[in-house]
Image 1 (cartoon, helix red, strand yellow):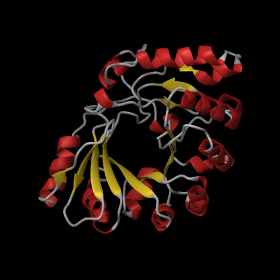
Image 2: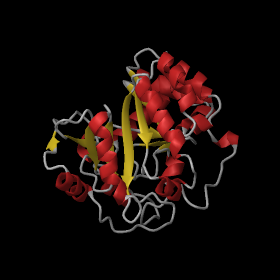
Image 3: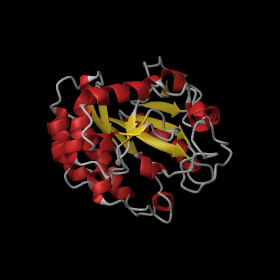
Length: 300
């Protein structure tokens, strides 16, 4: 989150529950099998549970999951389980209270840990997402790895992306190789696991640990060839890559009364025209030399 916060949008600029449900229903009809609602914290949306309940009933949807920062989530964990959500990504960049406050500008680490404990108690498959930031949380890498010794979780370390809201793009010193080397130096028995289709993470395991480690080359973009994800922002922009500027506004298309078959064609064309990788997508951004928007405006 940028120190100065975000420019908040009016409610009319955001998708309604009805629009999100209609868009997701259309995408499932087109073959989408997994939907993830992302944050920050999705529960800042007061009517999130009814939306999740409706989404869970879509015929053809195989998996509905959630990405959360865990600040508001703990009280809703039992209800999420009832809805049928079993997969959670929990954003957690530090286990140190002071560093957590430095990163998030909030003293909420205890709430995040409470959410983590609740997810594990109710049998969720939990992945912790930690962005590796030089000069900020390098000291947290090994403590986070140590969580996997006794907990059945996956801790995934993510290269820092240039979505910092500052308009600048710094040299990445802690890339995937350096992250791997740092962990390997501390855990020499670290071994690579077989890859999963379309996964953005390279998976590793330390013998004797209950959980696993993942490294996501979000800036190096080495996984682009197998990425099959699309994203829709809160304002309705469909993006086939985090590094592109968006293909079209599906919310506006709905409000303009465009027919379903035409919408399907628009979505299909956007997917077919997806850049070969994130580097190409970034080059195609009109009038922008670098990606500079905050990740908080895109959706985690």
